[in-house]
Image 1: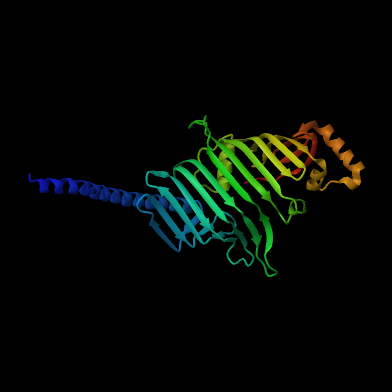
Image 2 (image 1 turned 30 degrees about the horizontal axis):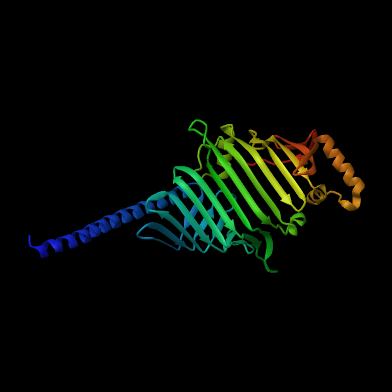
Length: 347
């Protein structure tokens, strides 16, 4: 072979290889994008069967060459499980999966979002600086779900102007399969946190921000597949499901409260179980509960003594605290031996 021909061969061969690889990768991307579209269509169909109907003004797929992006403009969700349907609308949802990791989907929603019954003139309106959700696993076997909302604001619109209901710096929720879970004994680790929350409708939470976080283990839930809430709770109760609360912490100003315990549902769908609550900063705690404060020190001291008798004295984060046992028996709430009230059925 002449020298010039050999030189041309060694130049052309790598270019040809790159071209072949590009064609193969393009075919693989289009195959994966088509498969992702089928999975999404199946998920939408399955959701519709349980009363959650998802529609988009338009749905497109892109992201070539390394990502698969599904963009849904003007998304609408109609929830048909209650006495009247509820319609949720947003501006856009963008869901992204990497070609090499198709079982991890990250989605972002663009607000504002409205929540209303058909024909309602004063819908709820939610907005945020960032709303991001992620799901790992297959639609039939979800392994992990996360939701993070930065700067959420919730208000009700009306003729007199918007009525603020909630605002916070950050809200997040995470659920994943427990490390020691099995098909025979399913369990999920749960974690939630809310930072710097204000609830103007509640005087105790209107001007002083609340921070809260919680962790728990949920057992008895066979999967995370979407189902109507009432159906899901009935199945959970029938399976002997329990919510083991490993830690709850609430903090507002000088007041701090922590709790742990175990909750379940009775056959009538009412709360069963017990929580041990330890609280410090009684001055601020009194405002939460509507109890006498510093100007009524004698009454406050008497209430504090009564709670200490029902529970016990303790120390929490270096502060004097009281421990209160809360018990739930088929929906009836007890503080020690004293009944406080009744919680209705959850289904």
